[in-house]
Length: 143
Image (cartoon, rainbow, N blue to C red; front, side, top):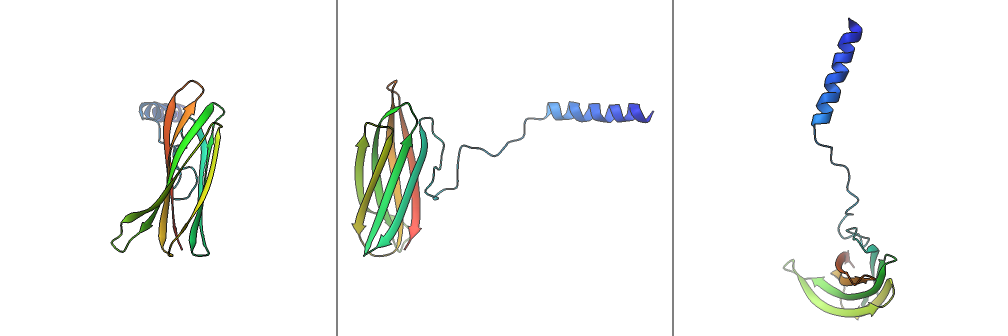
């Protein structure tokens, strides 16, 4: 009798679990915002790395976009903004860059006062098939 009760319980558990939708697992689609590392996993980009430092009265920054092996062109715009007293970001400067390889590495500098800055990148990635994908990322840092 104990065996038949146990079989019934196990059968009920299996039937119940089969009728439930699959549990959501941690997604590999995103990473924490503002970490300067790949926020979102894109189809044609394996990594975006953004960094900023403050030295000599200037914000110095670097952005690297690493395309996958099918990438033949990357066109990017990097934008630097400063957080104002009203809690809004104001445009400071922007830079464009492009490459016909699968890796774009761009750096720049802007003389400016210390504060909280946001470095953003928006890029169009082109693949060997001619398909394009738009990717974005950003980093916020206080100096």
